[in-house]
Image 1 (cartoon, rainbow, N blue to C red):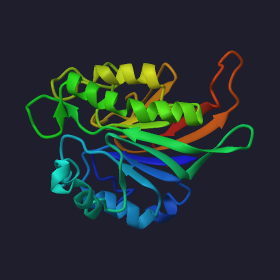
Image 2 (cartoon, rainbow, N blue to C red; image 1 turned 120 degrees about the vertical axis):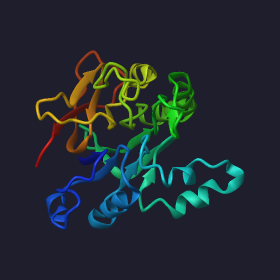
Image 3 (cartoon, rainbow, N blue to C red; image 1 turned 90 degrees about the vertical axis):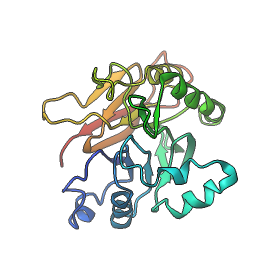
Image 4 (cartoon, one colour; image 1 turned 120 degrees about the horizontal axis):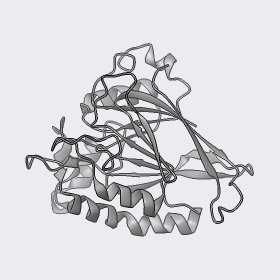
Length: 251
């Protein structure tokens, strides 16, 4: 399975008519925030692939459609402004249209979840303290636990905007990561955590880090991720497969 991941800027190789051919073998698209929704709409229209997105701390013109009180018709408004993509923040998706082939030949749905936003640094929209973000993660726990019971794992792909604390983040107030993401990685063991927010201007900068059993990938601009399965090594009881992940910054 192959993913196209984008965040933080409009990439000229994606925002081009040639992208339809260039990314024809992509199975799904993950948008990690700070992107105009018109860009998400363009990707959905051009590639016609399952697309998942979260918001960051910029480009929030349509954020309020997804976070109104329920009494104000959040669901209907969000549906009108979804641009063909699925908003995964504070939700859990079991994607039967994206089946993972297990080592024994059986298939299982790709399990996707995520959260929007960055650490609070100026009280702007879609900014949270670590404690506030922790409670958002905690609210996902019942559905993640059901995944574990039903599918043998909690989550395959966790989509965020900010990074975990001390993984790809920086020390300025705006770009510090969430410590609670490290708790989430330890507790729920997603195979892949995709984030944005941290701009990469040096081609040698670290884009991929393994934390526990989770591969953390910075999707700044664009990146291709191959997600495959392999038999579980001896001694790891209870797991249905071992995720094999490779990351390609350019095509």
